[in-house]
Image 1 (cartoon, helix red, strand yellow):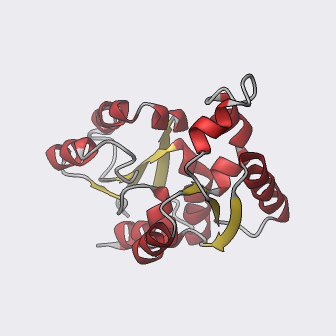
Image 2: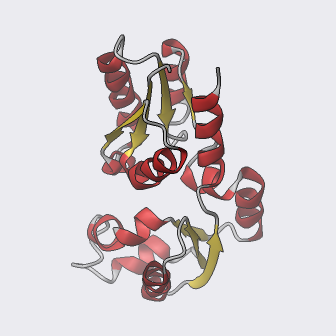
Length: 197
């Protein structure tokens, strides 16, 4: 069986490993880049290219588990040059929820802040800490004053994460909505890629 490498955003590591395990893909490996690259999306394309080049000749097929993720098409340019596919959409909210669902949510309330299981787990570090809200809570109004709603797109049924997501919405002063997406288009796309002959 052909060996497959998935180069992934660290924010998807747990979910991708779950898909690999559920499908018993012993021939599939995953290598992750740091999730905090999202704070500097212009660095994502070069980091992905470096991983691709390091993997050259070591795997039969390679897939990139990133959406565009704020690179403004620069990641797609790298992947076209390297001849590699990626996940669909602009960001993980789109491939988890599905394009139609995500766009309907965005159209209904453009002032929406989104969380995934990963972001709920790391909310204090990635949102509160990175934005300095722990040191300067008054900045919350500046950052989130134009937001109205927080939508938690959950991958798992985890009451603890659901409660943390509700608390995050309350902390930011936002209306809360929960949408159980599972792995969405990410899982479907990985299955299609890995099982393609």
